[in-house]
Amino acid sequence: MPVEDVVRTIELQLGDRSFTMEKIPTTDPLLRLENFNRTDLDVLIDTARGDSELALDIVALLVVLLVDQADAASAVWLKELERILTIGHSVWEVDAEGGQLVSRVDPTVGDRADAVTAEESNAARYLADAWRELRRRGGDFDLALDHANKALEAAAKPVVLPNSAKATLGTIIAALRDKPAKCTCALGAIDEIAARLETIWKAQRRHGVDDSAELVRVNPSAAEAAVHEATTLVVWFRNGLIRIAPTHPV
Image: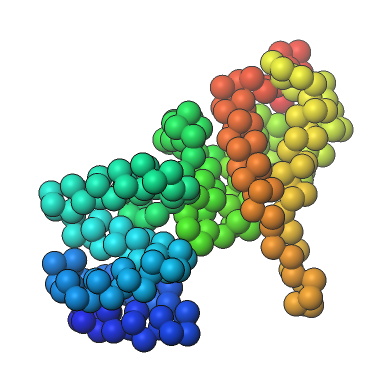
């Protein structure tokens, strides 16, 4: 799709407020910022002044285009865009590596999440997917929670049920409750760990429904809390803070 068609598509959809960046393809090599003329950009900027969601759609699209361009000038503009968002106290920031606009988190939290998800393990990869869905604009909170559950399964299985090929978070929780003496925890009782795992497990709708009236999405705040908690518990399992008791056979 030529760039002028991209701009026209956005303009046509402004009236009925149906514009979203998902409707604009980003793989076409013609999609380069220098191909937008100033008049077109002015139209978009002026229209977005009274519509914060549209403004964010445009900013998100600019991030995609700049990352796609991948040159020195684009890198400078990405840094400038991030500077503007920062001094404006925006809840959004630029994820240049992922090529998207993501929710801003406390630097300490972000650094901790980055450190945990950088590990070469399935648990770390699931957690990375959970954080990505949690933070990206328009993210799927149900999917974030699903990835958090998978991360816990991957981290806990080698400790709690190492010989089970079909272990799930549900069976792991049951095993901890059935034989709490099998494992030890550096902080708190095993029953407390099982309860924390169960809270995350039960927050997820695990079965489909055929009645649309019963379809309930995960609360975004619950998904956020679950991903944070899963990150902590994955670290505990990974670092041996939750482990098989020395006197208990596997």
